[in-house]
Image (tube, rainbow, N blue to C red; front, side):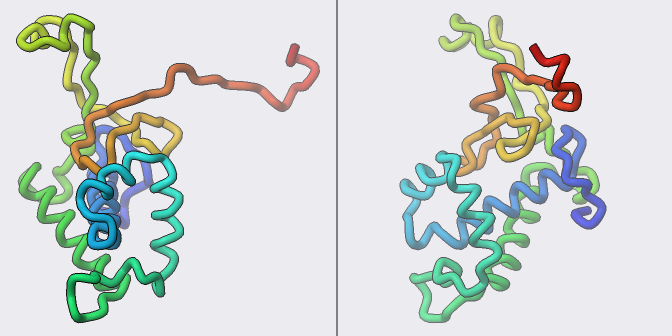
Length: 173
């Protein structure tokens, strides 16, 4: 599924679901022993965590790959294999079936909350959703969820989008 994945995060994408769960379990496998649960959750909610993650996966010699709670020294590849297995197992538990049937929109959801909908059970009458949602925090269609909480409920979205034609400078005024 990942070999065929085009990198998009459409609601129908199985690859996006697998990739996001793998990234979560890989980050957790690398950092949880050093940070602990509370700090891991806090760290994953700051935008800089993704830049660190991109650097970390390219650093096989990083000390973060070793689980300090075990006597054995783990490697990046061992942590990655375990993280991938954990991601696939969790997606199987959540979505059942085969990986080809998994959908990012079944995990990544958005709810449009009305001010009166903040009080239950009024949420059932006033809120819209939760609905399947494309996008993700680190792509052009930026619909952010809290990575550390691992629930993929959208917490913020872009307020505006702009298209600018930089090819015709005389038309810009």
